[in-house]
Length: 337
Figure 1 (cartoon, rainbow, N blue to C red):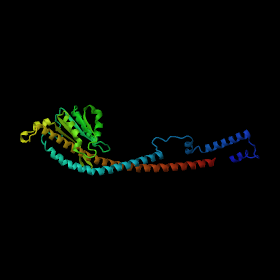
Figure 2: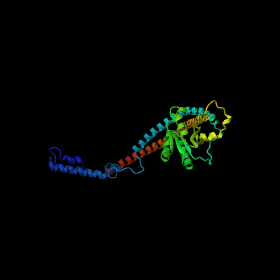
Figure 3: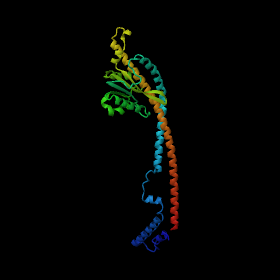
């Protein structure tokens, strides 16, 4: 039984019917019967069923298009992280040189107030009625936990000194603390030494510290140990009035200058060197942490790409196998009819 032979009855002048409404209806009926027969024969084919009634993929199953899209995005991310690692590595050498130059400058300056109340470590029994916290963080992220660790240390200090004032140097520290301690901010600065760190950049910061009414200033920053190692530092410096009470001025000679003004200038210079060296240490720590973080991110992206490529190949092979099976099953069903 062939559809062509039936249709031939209605073609030409010698056909069984020479056209008309009856011939059209009979031809449509035969075509519908043939379509129903083919559809029932291929009903076992999932490809055909999905073509007629599309079904959404099951949960947890990713299509080839989705896997390919993820591969493209992960490869782009790997390129970005690899580039950021190279940029951080190139800047680290210069930052380390500036840090090494700042260290002896600070070590010489801190001898001025040696034994005058400056504390490299904070004792538990330290009594501070009106402390101020100077938190020095980076302006950018993607550098590990160097900023979050300083924020945690600051919040821990706030538990001991809830009425303390706050000075933030760095955008990351400000954004992490402004919501909880916004009413305690005195000065906030960002992009300090963005091009090249200089003492002139921290002049306004020193003025803000000096004008603040405090008895102890706590300096929170990072100390650079090596490319893969750093540590948090919390140091304390008493106010100039307390230092003046402990210094025996009779052992010093002054050349026609007012003693209070001299001490104030020395104190401000001391603060400048302290913050300058801390920011230099912070810069080197930030770049080393970013280089390490981007290196780890690049390795993780490579592992993810390998996993996705393996998954893509397996899914593609499974799809091809399924389609071949369905085609063969459909052909066998047609033959059996």
